[in-house]
Length: 573
Image (cartoon, rainbow, N blue to C red; front, side, top):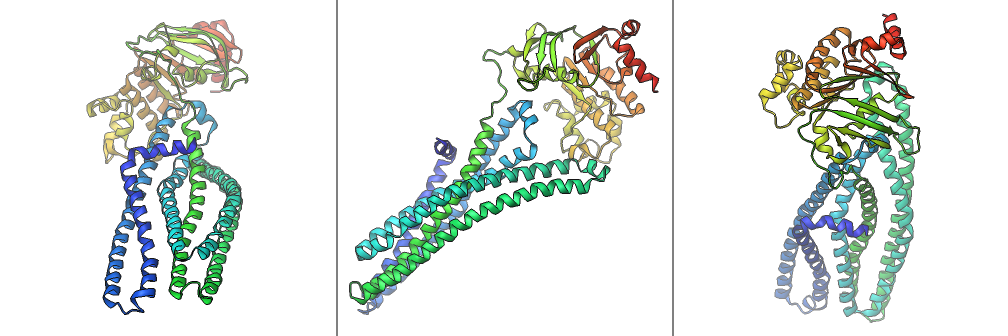
């Protein structure tokens, strides 16, 4: 089943692959000419002084080798091209699949481990895709062809030589399982090393800030030691595999010398036939070695393919079969008896939440950490599905609309801004890829970042560095706001959008956010209660659900949880 699935990836490249296999087949035929011509020369042309025939066959052999060179060129170049193209197809499939995976997958899998499946594993698969069929076809044909030709010379000696081959096959089969387990374990550890490395590099600034280089080194060394141990076990299994096979091959050389020498001594075969047998043995030693290499390639490649299949078989986000596009959104949002937990069986983060937000209203969610405020922002665009209840937008259950259309109508500004490696222009245009340059610049003006951008030497073409490292927190935040301005959604989510900024920058960005909120249904999550005083309604959420709701003035007058939070914040100012 797995092999059938693997062969499916040859289909788009079947013509080039067929030519590669044809060249491999013809190459193996070329290799069989030399021992037969050698036998004829030693038995006939040289003893009978047939100089002209000898020269003709010598020239012909040279022509065959020139043709053989052309076949090898084709196999080495286009054979690898087939493997690389298959690798690219698989990588594309894996990446497109990753883009459709739910948030929960990335919650439970390390970035470095995912990258290892797309990069390292697929490299091994590409090698198998090219060399595997080629080695198999050439090896089998050379072995069969050699057996037939050797049998025509002297069948008993041929049977003695080929009787050694089953021992080689049996030994390889016994060691293959051990090598399989060892290489699978080493592949897992490679993924762990990648994950640790990716995490440490991504957090290098935090590491330096806390002077924790020694701690990070120890973490990496721990993964590295496990990697070395796993690789050592794999290479020990491989050493047993190749060492044992090497001995059997050497033993085969002893057999041909002793048995062939005895047959020659007693006149059963001529010296020329004996020489031909030695050449034949050297010829089919190559396919035997290739078959051994094929076992290793098959093991590495198929273990990588299994991990690739695990990735692309992970269930993706699915729309309902009759899902329709969410269009002409006015922005009314209703939470009806909503319950949610991140893992089945765990304590619910949200339980029986009921909330209605009218179009154009600004609603603030406040309360202690862990109460579920950010979770409510995550379930609205269906980053996670509900455990119970439903959410409606303009009266339509969000499970009945396509995720794409739902998310197109929701803009999100968070505290942790992510900028892609590239230019400022590219990061703003990410909000709507079809936008014109004029629209991108206008979005930057609305976000109060245009003047800063044009003051830079490269303007909008300035590279922001990895994750926007060359920009300040406030500059990155305004670029993310410009991105949402360009998207122009009907519903806006502001999740702690200014909590990481200093007061002066917060005031500047708050003006941009106020402008962004106009005419949009807005949900604001904030710990700084000063930023939500003007909200149409403030919802106080605790781990017991919605405890209070009302305007800023009404909640202060009520003298409950909100009033206590407000006084505790401003008492320390």
